[in-house]
Picture 1: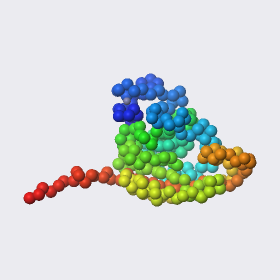
Picture 2 (picture 1 turned 180 degrees about the vertical axis):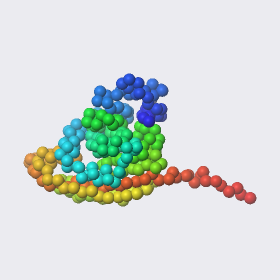
Picture 3 (picture 1 turned 135 degrees about the vertical axis):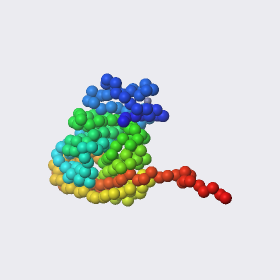
Picture 4 (picture 1 turned 120 degrees about the vertical axis):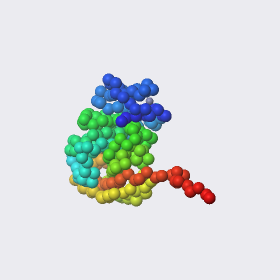
Length: 271
Ligand SMILES: [Zn+2]
């Protein structure tokens, strides 16, 4: 199901001991913690693309405190996966949503993220899932129609690649930060749902939509973790305990019918 990420290669990758190999000889090592790094030189705009070690650790501490449990429950409810699903989480971060959902539902789980620290953390905690370091903005390194569900949770989105790797009966869940997400820390944001539905219209149709909001009374350490996770510079004065809003807009899409180009329509012969 994994395909070679080398530009213009795209052959299937086969496992051989501690590495994956395509028939052209491109080879990728499996890390000690079990993940596979498929990042290509052109994907590395910096030495450490994606989330930093500090941001990944802060986000995991917030998940572990239970702050994001209501968000998780809403995602599980709208998706309602079964053990026969094959699920991709594109931009999976530390793997909390995919890993927890997979343990509940028993489905076949695959997580992709561009951050090595994020995938490392995911692989250590949820070794039963497959974890890949790759730049899904450019290319999702799987064969066509590999998945029955794709999740994109506050991550960057690639609508044409999502459509390519999703089965024709598949579902796509997009979670966007809602306008009131972390409003106490970064002010009011924008409602991004309409623009997102429009940008996905070529490949997906909206099937369901809901907003999940939770407020948490956080101590100073947890507020500090939220700031770390969103890369807000620390203020000069110490952060204080406060009530913080977490809010997501959930959009559930179904794959649209493939569009038949008009040039391939049968033409009437002129008489
Ligand atoms: Zn190759």
